[in-house]
Image 1: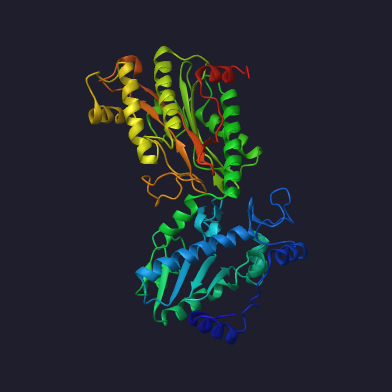
Image 2: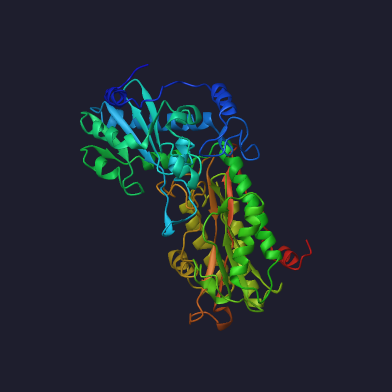
Length: 495
């Protein structure tokens, strides 16, 4: 086994304090056998949670082999980039920290959600952990720092995996206690021709940032990480299909059970309940439940108003399943009947959305930014037909007028995070494995004087999640009804 200078120095330190755990390369079969023998870790396994994980999966839907391959992809990407941009650097160290526990108040934690980049490359669900990848000219290693076993803390907070099990469970080359993270980083400081790859801005672990910032050479790996995450594997696509299925069914049941006079918060509770009982872990984000003129606030999340007969309600909600998020918006009349102005605006937005879906991978839809430009043009055209924009406006002037009705982008990437891989440009051409939203809307404040009074105070949005499959075809992942007649049948429990 080839050992780099960084690792030699640290191994010497570890041996001196007698805490180094044996490094062993385990095949997938070896790891499965190990899991069958040792049953309890700091996260679910196939042995303890066969209803969640199949044999060989490290996290729900994703195998140990796939996670190891992700690390290799990042390592090779950094190595290739550095040959041109940092030719004198001999050793690279990628540092990806986990999320940390956060508290609502004293001793009361928020629901823990793991850092997406960390779990993507480690499969580890535990807080206060750190994954490092050392890259030398001819070798590479993955090193995972985990919280030490602690009987008292485990009594309160649950079992920890411990560094003694890190190699076997997670398939990394080395695993150490987080007690030895700082000494390890102190050793790093003494090396020459070393480049650290670390996202200081988005790290939640304040203890390692000051040490890393003392180093001269410092780069952010996130743009490379997001580029890898941008293209979903077949396993990830199956998770996206499932989270969109759960989210769609939850929205359908919520629409079915809504009625005039219901509190917006009850609608929140219903979509949350329907998501969880069908397998989702949590909602993907605080939902927008906006009735009446509240829907003209794009990200209204107070969700505290009593709905009125004649109101439409805008529900923007999604769930998280296996670490992957759905993002769905539907708008419907609570009493099962559109008013004429509501129906006119609803059909404008629906027609725009259908046009956009049809033009994906065609002229006006090769990128998300092209979809936005197309949205402004098509929305302007339909609003002119509805006499809400003057007929004499054309080109950029028409697009600007339409943007005043829908002042947001029409799409974002979707995946482990709701607004996924934000460092990937929306001007990139769409490729197989991309998942994204299509979400035009109209928002007319109650005091907007340049539109007829009957349209004021109306807000609505229609949002679906779509994917480019391996055959370069568009697949719509969300299935909630959106045609007006289908919606009304659902509201009236006729389907």
